[in-house]
Length: 209
Image (cartoon, rainbow, N blue to C red; front, side, top):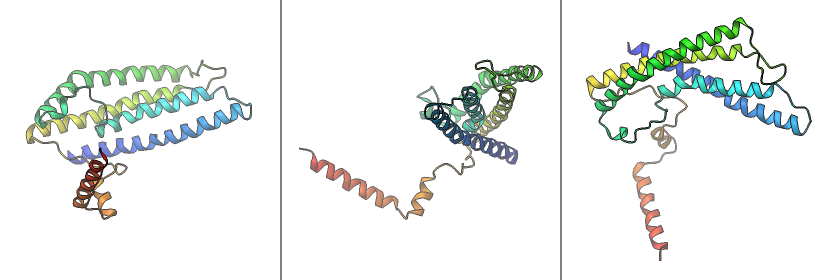
């Protein structure tokens, strides 16, 4: 079971990092379009649609990755003060009541939406001769399926936390900054940091009138 959970985590991490490159592509594309429009006097009518689809694809496919890294914004400011078992109980309840029904509806509606778009060979009507948007709409159910599988993983971790009383450590994202490893690389000791902090505080106190 643990191997299966880690496989889903790794897959959604890979998907999130892959689509993360769209940030760079979108930045370069916008820069080029601005240059082409104002410096060369040659705007492209399809650029707005392309930008929308690139951003939309990034936003949708990053959902499962963000969930796996616990990166979504929480509305409850008290959640962090709760013990692990209470946190897991709340998460499990919310997953069952709201998350799964909403994501299943997203997958179902997204599939219907994408299938109709493919059948009619849909193109954008925002601009003249708009680009095809059926590949973009196909991302909707795919993003929902990835989110659904990641939700299953989160539920299993909630159940494990309820049994054990603590959260199981997740696999680290290689792109995240590991402070402890960073300290080892630059040969900085925690004691030295605390000493320097103390000196800085004393200096600030000495500057105050």
